[in-house]
Amino acid sequence: MLEVKNVEMKYGDFTAVHDLSFTIKPGQIFGLLGTNGAGKTTTFRVIMGLLPPTKGEALYFNEHVGYHNVDEIGYMIEERSLLTKITVKDLLLYFGQLKGMSKPLILKRLDYWLDYFQIPEYKDQKIKELSKGNQQKIQFISAIINEPKLLVLDEPFSGLDPINTELFVKVVRAFQDKGAMIVFSSHQLDHVESFCEEIVVLEKGRAIIQGNIKQVKKDFKKLTIHIAADVDIDTLNNLPGVYKVEKNTQTFKVKIESESFIQGIFDYVKTCDNVTKFDVEEASLSEIFVAKVGGSREQV
Image 1 (cartoon, rainbow, N blue to C red):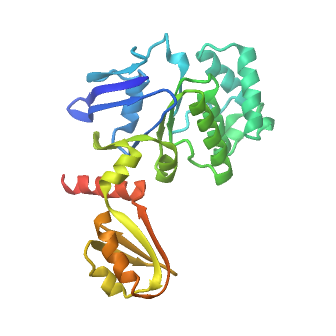
Image 2 (image 1 turned 30 degrees about the vertical axis):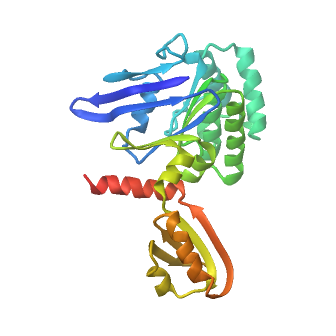
Image 3 (image 1 turned 60 degrees about the vertical axis):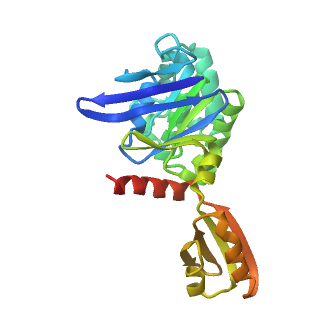
């Protein structure tokens, strides 16, 4: 289990993280989100034991991260941190041995992952000769080569096409199935929504959204209704609970304040001609993120 308890992190007079707490259990994928400069990287470094917090603590199975347990952790940072002048094999031998692995085991796992990502021919090539997407694969391999129990992934899908993104997704799911704890951060909120059960959204170092994603969406209350019918857009805009109507090619997207207004809108739509669609959906995580982060900034 990973426990972050009332963590505060100051750099001089600047507070990067304010009183942050959350828990991640084995087999759980946890989303740590926020805009640039929100405090995510600082939080990652505290979790990894790279920065001692000003207040509070981060515990990995009731212990601080140190030389005795760091071999069980994998960390993929957003900025590429590869040694570009050496070969893929030499790089992974270096990273693997830092994690206490033997050379035969490193090479065995490296061959497996290079085959999995369909790049076995790059084993003896220098990192700088690889494309950005293939460098991303090597950085990912370096994070998982030791089969970590805690895997921290910061923007893991950056620079990947949809096919390679799916390969990454399958690996993350496989580690989850093995009981690994995964801390996941991405600006691609559709991935977060499909991956994570629990999230924290940081803004200026403070948690402005926190909890189970399903509950977060339920608590947000605002809904979207997709309508295909011969409706009058002005009438829709004036119905109780409607705060926005968007017209697309074949449908109308109606934003409402809560589910209590669905019946009134349905009563109007059923009087219209050519009704072929009336679908109600919860707000996406992206919508909630924009609403909450934008609201937080307006209050500053």
